[in-house]
Amino acid sequence: MPFLTVADVLRLPVIAAGLPRVAAGEDQLSRTVRWVHVTELLDPASFLEGGELVLTTGMPHPADPTQLRGYVDSLADVGVAGLVVELGRRYQHAPQELVTACRERDLPLIVLARGVRFIEVTQTVHALILDAQGELLRRAQQVRELFTSLTLRGADPEEFVQAAADLTGCPVVLENLIHHAVICRTAGPPDGQVLEAWPRRSRTAPTPDRAAASGPEGWLVAPVEDRGRRWGRLIMLPHVSGPPIGPEQTMILEQAATALTLARLTGRPEWDRRAHSSVLLDLLHWRYRSRTEARLRAEALGLPTTGHRLVPVVIDHGDTTAGDTTVTGHLAAELPISGVKALVGDLSEHRTGLLLALARASAWQPVVERVGRDLRGTFGEGLVVAVGPGVTELSQVTRSFREAEQIADAIGPGTLDRPFHVASDIGLPELLYSLRDDVRVQRYVEQQLGRLVQHDARHGSDLLSTLREYLVAAGNKSIAAKHVGLSRQAFYQRLRTIERLLGNDLESGAHRTQLHVAVTALDVLGGAGGTARPASL
Image (cartoon, rainbow, N blue to C red; front, side, top):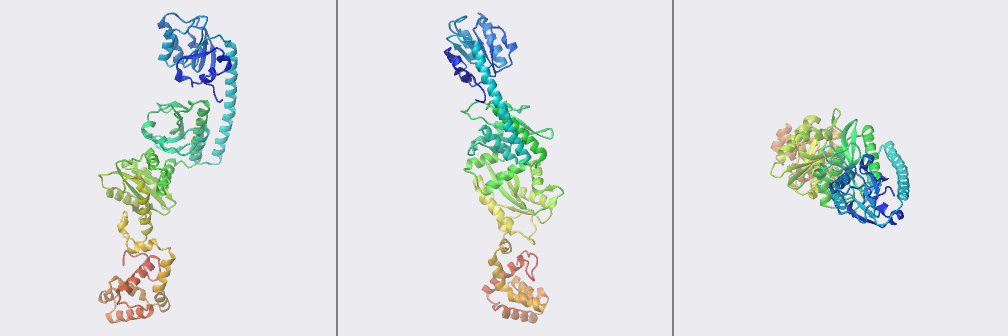
């Protein structure tokens, strides 16, 4: 056993022989017994440190109820594990004043109907305690070696938290200073309810200087530091129906917190961003078992969901940086200053995801436009900000993020200069640009325009540009001839050559549509004779 409780001691044969009966503090029998102390002093508290199981015959107990209550108060104040009174010498039965005083202080009171040898009790219990302490030391060495191995391997913070959860068998949460649950791990299947109303509950548990129980829920809390300053804390949530926090759990959480502190010195410290990225990717691919689990995870990171409009944004930035600042880091620093609630994280090496939570009555466009202008001003005009449709349910975010990704895929060089793009900005050029890697599109372009491009290459002509202007003018030859600076007769001659090469009737609306699509696709593919990326045709 990792440690002895009052209940454990009562089951020992040396105590059971005394026919023990619990007269008070029945719900406190899980208290840890650190030592056994035999005393007949009226004021033993001055010799105690807490956690002792006090054995007495009651001989020195005062007859005055007030003094007897004071005796119990002194024991409770020092934090003894319980009081064991042997009947037969002073008492034939436990005095009601003693029972009442112990009940008022929630102090376990055990009455022995038969006499026992206190020396045998102390020897037996102390031997078990020393064995448990030795086992705890051996266990501590194993735990220390495990976390040292993870540290030397450069493990991610998720691995440290998962190891703490597996070792304790309880949920473990790593949170930052503003009570956002950065990582949550359980020993078994994920338990979304762990994070229910997390920020509010977390604020009720103060942070001790070292691992200790804290707050109304009896959490075990250990601080995590970063270069001598408090960064956050590691929290173990005991099971409601399980045993109380003991020395082993405390030791494990201390070791895990120390390992995380070292990890912040030697590894990548952007744990908040990693947490945001993880949630965004889980939403993008919907890896949650339920809507409730998704909601609790997002809200534990400070994103309000109920009663808000959720606007997914995908920023395609390539490998652009501004000095040492990345797009993700810039947004993470700037958005809180502006009061915008959002999750910000990396979706891939070249894309940043942003999930805005805005009041339903407010307009989202000004917020996104401000973000887009700021990013393009900081990181350059080549950055693309794509916005999915706003939704009111977290379960709808996946579809909206997908649409934002499709918009980002379609926006390329030459697109109209805008701070952000939405689905209505996707025209034929953007659609074909998003399909630029599709072999079927490439084959279509070759079938429609291959002979014309080859003719221009062999003869140094520019018939492709002539065709493009004709299609832009919607088949109006006069307007097209004026644009290319040719007489109508010369322009007509070029059109006849194009018809002969392609085998198409340019007077046919259907043929012009086919060629229009082909020329547009060739342009977005960067083909011969095309601009880098025309805005429209």
